[in-house]
Image: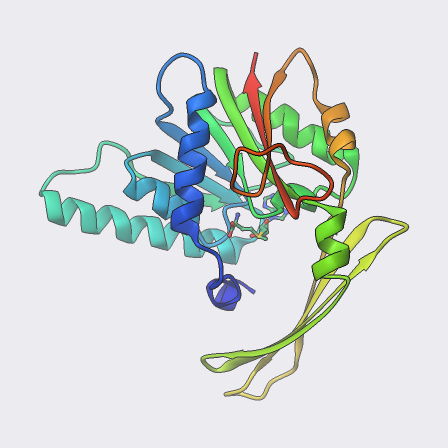
Length: 253
Ligand SMILES: C[S@@+](CC[C@H](N)C(=O)[O-])C[C@H]1O[C@@H](n2cnc3c(N)ncnc32)[C@H](O)[C@@H]1O
């Protein structure tokens, strides 16, 4: 999917999202947020926005192809900025392949972020707890972990029975999405065909676990995190089960 991911996401305003996230950074205590790690960074769209805004960014993604796109995007940014300013960047933005449920960093960052429903890729609460523990180990005291989740309301209303057929360059894909209410699983299936070679149709299946907001709050270890905010979409209104997307802002104790 990495090949056409940006096309699939063309409706997303990453610039606006990055502005929103940087506003949420004001919840951090102590030094101003400068070093940011994005988990499940995809092709690096948001990382690039944050890098352009002056943050020292790095990212990881489980998919090698996604991480490679992100790394290439950040490297291009580095070369262009150095050419423009005639100075080496003080920090090389980077992305690598890694599992957000099992990672560690050499030096703590000011903020960890995990966006666009990526938290929902934790198939069981135990995995989500592992993610929260890894993030807690990666963030300095007073730093933040910001993530968003997709609600059941959004799944039922917009992706309960969804079908899309699209072409991008020489690739065509069909996307089928449906929600499994008993297991609380949102399924996205992609059937991908290379129109040029007319080779076999590739199948990619994504399963996301939809947690209630209460379930997520119950996962937070009070010795690690304080819930600083729970917001509806990209606003400061309280996030509820009726929101489509809820941003959680956790502060490291
Ligand atoms: C919906 S995309 C979001 C990508 C990016 N955050 C964005 O906003 O465009 C979800 C991403 O989560 C990644 N992912 C799923 N499970 C993961 C895991 N255990 N560790 C790291 N990345 C994971 C996928 O490879 C995919 O790139």
